[in-house]
Image (cartoon, rainbow, N blue to C red):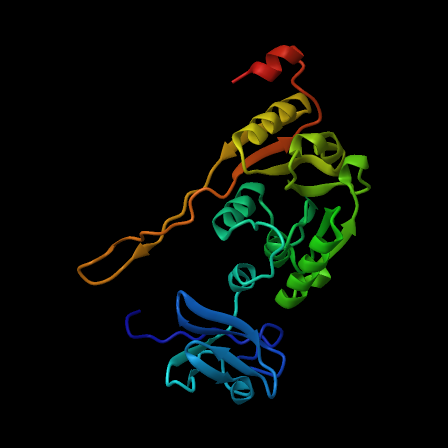
Length: 286
């Protein structure tokens, strides 16, 4: 097998243009701490401390190309990923970070075709990521009471190209929900325990529940309420992420890191508590 060259078959429906067109988003990358996500538009000048970048000049170039700023600094033209759109998103609220997003998807089994109920849209970072996972056959139904947050989230979703997979409502889910048989429910509110009964009626049996809880008090109240409302497989977690600076002879952990962002509470819906246990035994069982 050594020395043999393999070629991937081309699928016309999956081919994506690597050319930068007018209106395309581009990540202008210099270093990890000096990068900008912007749109390629004629007559647009990008002013940075590294010099001016003429956005007209990159239209028609391929992603992965290299250009120079007016100060002679090297800029790489990178095609943005969902990660880039999230980290460079417009924000009115704290966002859910990628370190938590991946575990949420893995733990809930979210995939193409999943129907997801999201309570607490915020700035739409989690919404954007989930839409990129459930598309093209799935859908996100997201609720928030704040019109400003919804507007920001919609702009972020449009920017990332996933708005068609999301339906947004300005509504208070405490009043009840019309969504039925969702595969996953995500709650990002100050009182996630306050909508557990509403969520229970909105997800299918065995469906997954996730609560975003910045504090231990929120986590504790949510876990207790889940046990009272026919949820099992209850697990609470915190994801810690630290980068490593890999340099020859000097590799070490980074001095800066994203430490605590939130606690996550996971659970699965069942139809009722076990009939061989009393309600009190069920709630206190290990």
